[in-house]
Image 1 (cartoon, rainbow, N blue to C red):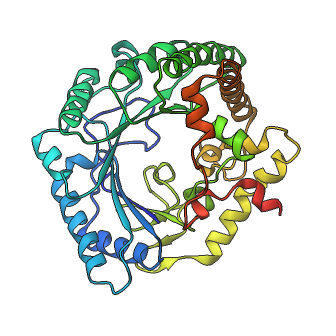
Image 2: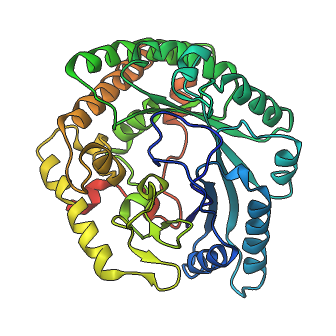
Image 3: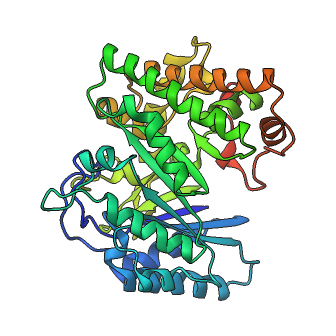
Amino acid sequence: MELTLFVDHECNLRCTYCYNGEKFTRRMSSDTMKKAVALALERPAARLHVAFFGGEPLLHPDFVKESVAEVEKALADRSAPAPELLFLMNTNATLIDEAAIALMAPPDQWSVFVSLDGPRDVHDRYRVDGSGQGSFDAVVAGLERLRAATLPYGLLAVVNPETAPRLGDTLRTILSLEPKKVALSANFRAPWTEDSIAVLREGLRDAGDVYLDLFRSGRALEVDPFHSKILAHLQRGMPCPGRCLLGESALTVAPSGRIYSCAEMVGEDQDGTLAFGHVDTGLDAETLGRMRAAKDRVEKICAPCELRDRCQSQCGCRHVALTGQLGEITETLCEIETAFIDEADRIAETLVAEQNPTFVDYFYRRPWGPDDDAVLTRLRRARDE
């Protein structure tokens, strides 16, 4: 089970492409948080992941501390066996100080996800503060504090048409900061064109060469989308995250108390169009059914495509980013996903031909089966059976 608490719409940065819209103060109340925790615990699961999102959740460290205590108390009060518990902090890392480190210190288990778009000039082009100043140095300082405290962190780089040519430099910069995992994520709200997607392919090839050299050096690391596309080939299908199954094993709660599938769906949370419930009333089965039916229109649209089972066309947040509607996509998604898959295949074919021992051991000698409690990793192919 994954519960995301969208702590506040406010943020100390003003990233120009942020999918959560305008920044304003609307902090989640303690009452809403407690109801969200109770709702998540109604569903038995072997694992419970509680994530903090925003805005910037570290604007409210006391709320985060209170939420952690509430989760632990709620689990201790239950007669059922406690699930494996992990807390996740989604942050821009500029507010990571000694107090934040102490907040995430053992014995609690934490994983941190930080946004870093690449080298200083790439990152600072978009990720700026209220005065328009870049945030690269502050982010790196926060990462250094996390590393000194041995807190694991992953890095996410958003890829825009203007920065796509620098993907190799982006991955080199990110790897130098020693993350536990990496994600390169296309901004689907950006105005991608045929020319910019051609440039994306060039940037992906450079990044692919960096990934090749990583394995050749004897290091294995999860770098998406390369990792997931290779794994999708081995598993004969793309795992469908719980959040994309709408209400099954992932819930995101906004400060208003409305329930969404993921943080990207929350936006400014003005009218609740993409919500399917409220912490006061639970999940709305009728709304969920309607939203699932709308989202699954893509399954029929994409059925003839030979890459269907390796593509993330099922992600509702991508539908909304591209068209504003669940179940509707554009060729932009197809072209970008194809570019990712093509580069992942070049990487894999090259390393298999070389019989690279690190690559073979990492992808072929590890158990990649689904989790025990597992709609989280149900393959899209299963919908056809």
